[in-house]
Length: 235
Image (cartoon, rainbow, N blue to C red):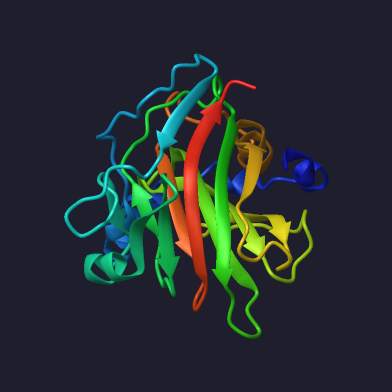
């Protein structure tokens, strides 16, 4: 869906050049407000037999509570364990999210976004409450900012907004790109493919870090959505 950003090339230089005088004050504030969501490098991903594809997550390693090993909660671990659980269906493993109110994220997944720019994943919406708009999102993080907070792009499944809709992010929010719209696929697995490297360049106007910093997932309020295997590809 990188083509969706062609009309959004007018990027703000102010996002790249923070005022040094405010750095430490902002750092303290950012840690107080967002400390639970700071992601640090700790884990290495697995690779697939194909050199052109790397499997980031296949959800085949639940912990004792059914939560994916190596993943953490944005805020409440107790709530995350209640709303995100690994399930299995016909030999296929996936992460089920029911009425989520926070993201879950990985610690660092080590891949070179320039070498493996294509992110692919499967998801399936099972239930949608009345008047719902936001259904689910995936956030690849290819860098961190001056406060060491992951720099994300938010790829959204919306019930109402058209594919290609873009909402520009701010200091503590991600740029949102709608890549799937509508409810016609209710109950069906669908696969997405996005060029996260190109999108990062167009949104942030600079190269990402040499190694990506991780991925977050989020289900909508009242929504039941399943997340399948997540991979990156060279092309």
